[in-house]
Length: 193
Image 1 (cartoon, rainbow, N blue to C red):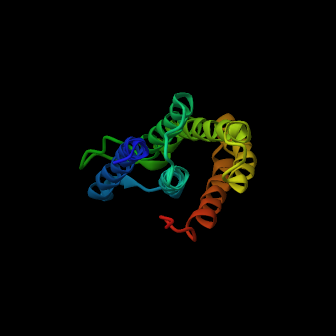
Image 2: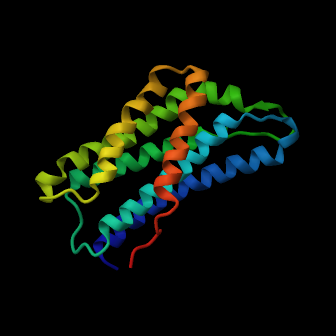
């Protein structure tokens, strides 16, 4: 097992915990479905977070594939911070403690966590933007220039979700973000030979 395999292993643990938390939350909602007031916005936001986690895991894999040595510690810390931001977004996307028989309103949950959820995504994006901005100085070239440009465009859009927790705004932007990540991610191969 190489050193980069250990790095990817740690990232896989964090992303695995995030996905597992989302599955447990979804399970609680489905078990209590008769008492859930469903709302499409938090479901789309949760799906966006899940796809972002998958996209990040894939980027780590592609970025470290064939690497003979790991990144400097400061780069690793920034990558881990980016991964932690996604974990926190995953924890917030769906309610954690759903008890069978107790009513839960997904819209109220989203209204309670929206700033936190999108702030966690924003921290994640900020780490990637900073690292990609420094890539030419550290590596001599940019590995993923189109993703860098896309994140520069999407960052202020996500920032608007944090600044303005207006449901009308979120009902427009969140589906557009979900559509953007679907178009960007779903045609891509998970692993590259």
